[in-house]
Image (tube, rainbow over all chains, first blue to last red; front, side, top):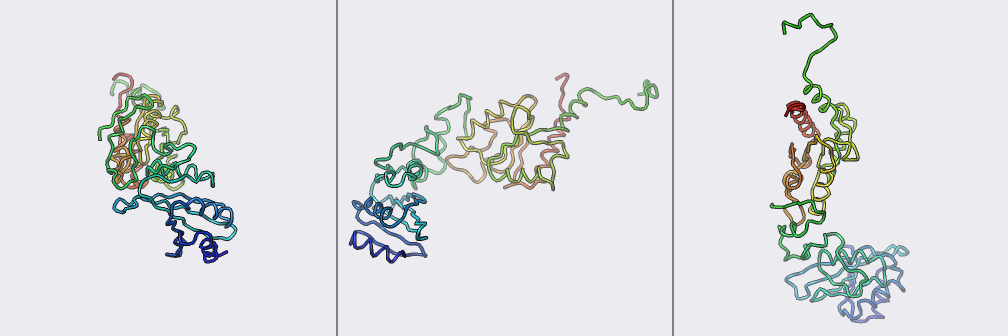
Length: 165
Length: 158
């Protein structure tokens, strides 16, 4: 199955709710109507052999109306086809896709940790890279680059460390 | 010197205990490898055949309890900082620290939310080696400087 065939099948099912295009040799499926977002993903997995979720990416656009955007990188090993499914939202709440691909668990946790995206329905949404006592989400565009005040928030191993620089 | 001249057999040398102990210490520096980033690759190059740390008596140890030198090579993050401190505390005296690379000495280009601005915020450092990463020659410079420092130390009487 090529991307053109996939677009035909999807358009028949979700007419007018998707924007499918190829740019820089990458295949994108932009979900315009967020209410069908998970139905599109379920159709991709169950009907179009996209069994492998490669990555979950979050983007912050502070000047746009829809401030947050999720890009899901899917790969079909059977058809050797890679697609990027995009959905945008005004606030940082998106439905979790861990019920479709279990492998999305840690990827969504990472996006929550660094970008502050709340994935509704995630079984264990807590920080994965940064320590528990960190405040804020550092990969947002409005996060101050040299914010190091949190270094002294906790002395987690009781060693008496003090950071001044 | 005139008093003992020709009174000892030919194969007897006289020296001070400090010199003997310091000579032994400087000739068998066993570092604990604290490779945290790309500087660790350069440290491995120093240990490998071409630059060959072994000929200085330097044998890398995997545990702090057998080591007397800690080579901090790479970017120290806030999350790693207590671990660096804990490994340093586990080393027996006497102990020295060399900070390798821009990141370990000052934070380097990582003037960001997660990076400790110099490992000397956590542990005392004897020698700083700048560079990103430094060449093995710079590593050697620090080792030779450390050996000279060890020879000046007093062991028996402080």
